[in-house]
Image 1 (tube, rainbow, N blue to C red):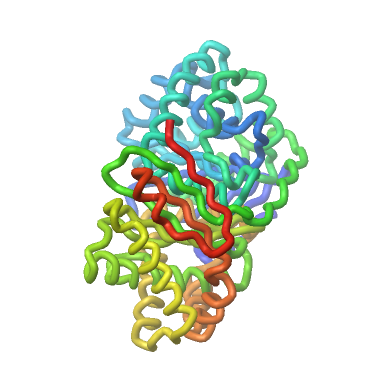
Image 2: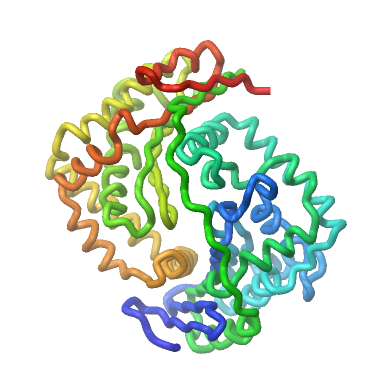
Length: 435
């Protein structure tokens, strides 16, 4: 099937299910390639937690055409380009940005990494040490650790609540055969989307991608484990010697395609996105309680969450939690004023428009939308949705999703400080001391 979409891109679906999207941006000088694979840490169990992330590292160690890591990096960097990858809960992303005349090189390099990685036993043994150090780095960084703790509360005993990089004992026991098995199961062609944007010819690029990916064997993607109910434990505290205390307050939200997604996005922008948000103005500018304070939304295929984060002086942690919850209560109790609502509409629309101004932003947008929605929304469509969100919608969402009894609190910092965090009456609290 070959068809032009409503936005300026060419879409093609191969017989095996691989989807190809190419956007011509003749005004640019670069070309960006993004390959989104719908396989991430959510596919894992406790026994193999960290496999998807380990695999992402390993494909950079050598391929059939480029047998060493240096061969891969120099192929791109010698042309002034960048190549990288990232693993998340439900997706692994491989990307490159190069001068437009070198798009074939970028495509060949990343396709080779995905289709013909060496996965040598010797490289696996070597990379174990690197990933273990990465895990230890995360554990030593309280601002990262606190996000993992709140995820554990929101998604108990489930891969959505685990650190993407996995567990040290699993990493140390990893074998090349496990990585190959994960790739065989997870990298199903129906879960692969290849997107290119830049100063290219769409038909030429589409044909080149098809030639490389048409031979991928069709197979059924694995089923994902349904998200759990939130934890009965409402507060998780980690005592650790730090200069700052770090706190997250979280609520379960909505999935990627839920009707309230954009309403919660608007709510989040009002609450804690940017220096003009309520949390920033109240907690930092007015009360000097925090240096970094913000909120964010995350959406998965069948779940989602809203989180407030702040890094603060340890002796003010309870004050910050109360002040943050007071701003959430305002959203439940008061209608957002018309001028603030209009400003946040323009903020969200403007961020989207700026994101789609460069080739990497466009390639990521095309691949991500296609993978998770099975279609690509136009900028105009998203802007219309944003404009349709009313102040009453935002208040209703706050009342429905951000109720006090649905909140979860995680904190990392000096033991005496985090012990002052007040838990809801009757709530279960877990207190740990960092090793």
